[in-house]
Amino acid sequence: MASESHPVVAVPADAERLRRLNDLLGLVAERNAFQRARLAGLVPLERLEDLARLPFTTKDDLVADQAASPPYGTNLTFPLERYTHLHQTSGTTGATLRVLDTPEDWAWWRRNLGIVFRAAGVGPADRVALAYSFGPYIQFWASYEGAQDVGAMVIALGGMDSPQRLTTIRDYGATTLLCTPTYAIHLARIAAQNDLRDALAPVERVVCTGEPGASIASVRRQIQLGWGARCLDHAGLSEVGSFAYPCDGCGGMHLREDEFVAEILDPETGEPVADGETGELVVTALARAGFPVIRYRTGDIVERNAEPCGARHPGRWLPQGILGRSDDMVVIRGMNVFPSAIEQTLREFEGVGEFRITFYSEPTAMDEVKLEVELARPLEARAIQAQLRQTLGLRVRIVPLKPGILPVQVGKARRVADLRPPRVERRARQEA
Ligand SMILES: [Zn+2]
Picture 1 (cartoon, protein in one colour):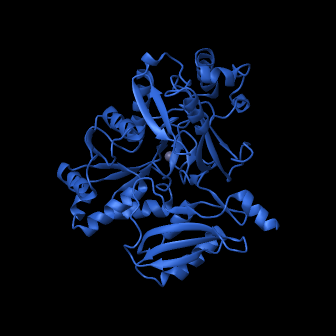
Picture 2 (cartoon, helix red, strand yellow):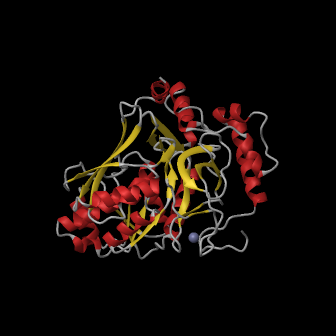
Picture 3 (cartoon, rainbow, N blue to C red):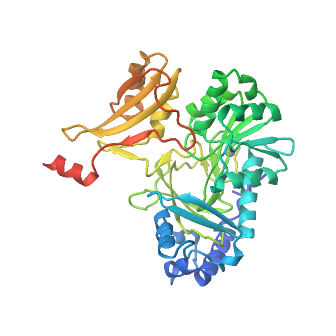
């Protein structure tokens, strides 16, 4: 690690990370009611690896705590008056989770998003357009702060439709666009349809987050071709912080191991996966003391990769970024299927528009995958089917549609429907 360097990130030795982790654990075990019970008798740690002895934290744990002690719950290390920032996110069941930050923790967010921008090559000469709605969600505000941290000018695109956003980007000469990968593709398409291609010209880089995809080669290529700009990826969560910065040399992302202890675990067993295998990313933020999460199950599926990137940047390299969400993963006839893998294959073909994936059960109780996809050339369906069989090892039923039939998905895309009966019921039917 010591030989690796980056203009903006340096990962300290394990002894220093352990010291910081024990400082955090000691503080929260003393002052945080939610954590005290969970950590009793387990801290301090002797080695970094001993973190694996502590219990996981899930979003459901935090939602349940806030339901029992509304509205803010008990995962608060300090008295309420110490907190200055309130954001929210939605739980897996749709329940709202509130996340609070102290001025110190918010400054940490700002620094971390600043690192994302620096790693993406954004500086004082840049104008950063944020294609977000500026609701109560942390990503918008943290990105705003991060752009300020590097001295860039911020152009907020809240409250505008897509053509208005494009003309704003053009008129103000935005050099950098922040949005989800889905929206980046959508906006380039809107520009082509509305004779607004000149709006894309000033943009030098598209910095994506919010959903998997921007590190997947075919999606990145589509964004780069559509915008004539570089596509960079980063990742974070309201409950955790900004935990991965873009690799500007080799694509993908690097984990911020200077600020987080990261584990990559089998979602079923909780055991570490081997190099080359995929697992769920579990992170512990070393510095966010006000609303701490210890061993937080992000639900993000990544491939464990032992190789450094070609530029030898610090922090574990995730060449393909986040592959999918553990709650999106669908088991079809014993195979793990990520909708993002289907998207990756689709994006390798020209003339592919919107699509919809449906998982369903045949009366024989056999699970099937149906892919409805808008195709400029319907005959391409056969080639797509062959490619999907090769990459997924599954036969996918393809329904070609005329372009413009499916609803356009923007933001966090919802293109997947699972119509299969609950697993227990399916098993009973299979055994019958
Ligand atoms: Zn790198």
